[in-house]
Image (cartoon, rainbow, N blue to C red; front, top):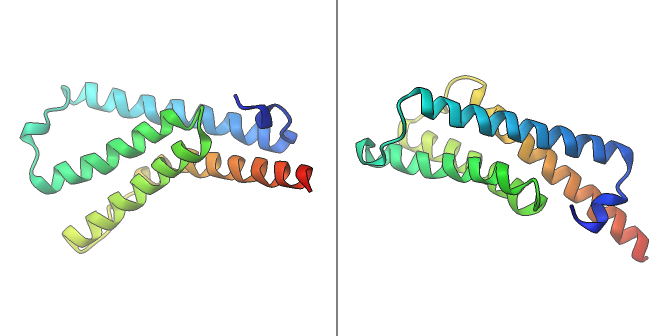
Length: 127
């Protein structure tokens, strides 16, 4: 935890812990999903599926990184999901169906919000 996180306001601390819990839940669910599907074989993917999986993996990795590096991990999570959606739209002509993919980006958005709040707070302390 960085020095600025220790002195965050109570709302930011609460949202930060909610983001961490959400990351663990979402990241763990993804791992369980792949285990339940019998593992992951990248050689069995089409080129389109492989690119989508790269964006999906970036999102998943960002969830884990954000616990220590909110800006980097949050940006990876949100950027990975936005890239996933954009590529899917270009490749198929429609967005992915369902709400589950949107849930993946939620902890990343919360981490970015916490980073932004701490950046504003530390900037005000300097002035």
